[in-house]
Length: 292
Length: 315
Image: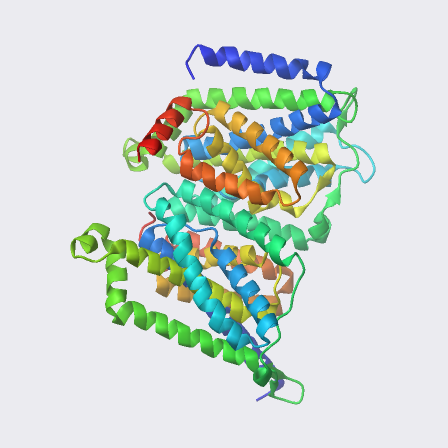
């Protein structure tokens, strides 16, 4: 293979890796909307919180895997608490109030982050045994951590698919999205289902933040950047559709990565152009039902 | 508010604002001008959110266009012509709203919220990378615009022009909302399908409302750039969009007076909290969360507020 082909393949790997990471965040957002009908602006903050947890615990323990083992359950717990204290009161309310409350939450999370860890940019070291690059040609190579990251994301995506499509709990979750009352009548505790789905969404976003931390560094405002791209993802894929979120994330990964290489002057704008095109073609997204 | 009390209160408010320069110092006048600018901005969003039922989370985009228009029209160390720059800024914001509106109005409901936020952020990210707009640091507007004897940098000219703009915006929106157009918007808000089947071209009404709201937001942005003498990408950003939405809700949606009150409360609160601590967004966030949980009707309807409190105390 020529250097050009290899270069193209590297970009393709980057695109897939970015898309998979984005999917982890967007899947939670779309799940929470699809099942509870809640639009959650603070979803990007969970990504940010995950990245900072990874930074703090990796700093303490010196080991990213140990940090993940502590931080993932912690963020799931955080999701449970947040649902019980706040989000529970948003079900069935106008989207406007959901927007406002979660907007207030972003301000709170960002200020707490600034109070606790400050406003500096931090790096998180790549785990030792993955801290090498795989040489591809004389000049080109690919970092092993990024490959591992993609593999982990794929594994989580597969688990998520199995959970939702093949388990009893997943069946209850899917049923809850269709008809809340009916599920309750069947003796399933819908409140508990909602709590678990919300916490799952939080944990997925936080997990994505933790995985991304060694590749992107940890910085203030990282959550909002992700939130916007997640919205674009979900709008492209159709709100509430996990399949759509996956496709949307992959499309954005490709457009953003190849855009930065082949049309750098427009790179930031291409994903929005993609969203505009989808809106013109299919206003409810690729896999969306009619807008609610 | 009762029908008789409101005109009296409005008249009183206007007199107080006209007479304010006689008693208030520079700080007070700057703060009052800031409140009035935000009130114009909040009323423009209220037209969308409160009357047409379109929750836009990217309204700051047009505010930013108005502000940057003044920057681009100002000579490097001189003053822009008021008579040229003001209409151009409004027209630029209206044009931006027309283009964005054609796209975002294809969606509705929760899609609309997400899409408006995304397009607003598109402006933000574009401005942070665009050298001709000053990049992420922004740029200075060294002198306030002027026109012949009227120099917004001198005396109380700026204050009074903003006051005139506020009154004009209020009057314009009042007229629009009383006209058949306003009634059609309310109809679309409560049932778009029925309005369509009655023969109303709902998309066109919504687009026109979006463009008017964008133009008025541009007017507010223009004054903002003139007041502070600086533009930066934050003017397009989601934080400002969220904050102006908060003003509209806080005042009680669907009332122009409410938007003005909401703007005043939020600007004063920002100012007060900002003096107390650099981490003022923390209490602000707590305030917003508490407001959503406790005051579903906003602040302008004391009766509903009282009912809500009684309901709550019973539970």
